[in-house]
Length: 211
Image 1 (cartoon, rainbow, N blue to C red):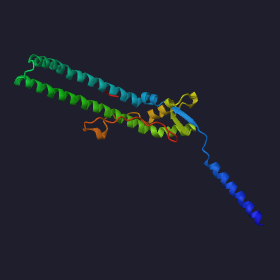
Image 2 (image 1 turned 90 degrees about the vertical axis):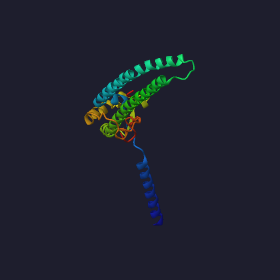
Image 3 (image 1 turned 90 degrees about the horizontal axis):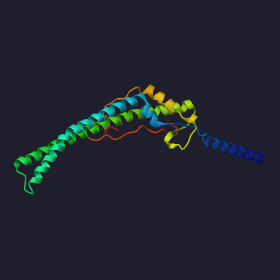
Image 4 (image 1 turned 30 degrees about the vertical axis):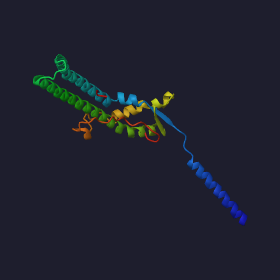
């Protein structure tokens, strides 16, 4: 009787261990890939934002040229006047010209820097909005395709075309994010500092430039 009980107990223990080992075994990997660069370049909101930022960058370049051309001319004139002194100290009139030039040069540089920071902040804000919209889309597409891993296409050496879900991700992004706010990041408004560069989050396992 005792042997029968012990035997039954051993069998039960073995069954439990076998069941635990089975439960801990990882499921087979089901992988899909997405071309995130294509998604963030071709989505409707992305194109609109890119065109706007490009226009602002071009306007900044034109403004910088407008500011620097007369300054360059004045700098050459001042250098000629200083050279003519042959080491002597400039008189009051020349010193006043030099001081005025330096002030205008500083003011121009500050204006260009403010505008540059503003464009960068808008770019960062756009990237953050796209990233937030993409996160739930990764999970949705994975569930739709029966996948448990999604990787960025640039991280793969080779893959079968059937694993590419870029079109699915792009379609869902166009639907969920038809437009983005083209404003600077809230914490950067009026701060006069360069905005951090943000990038859309990369898909991972089990979840989903102005001048």
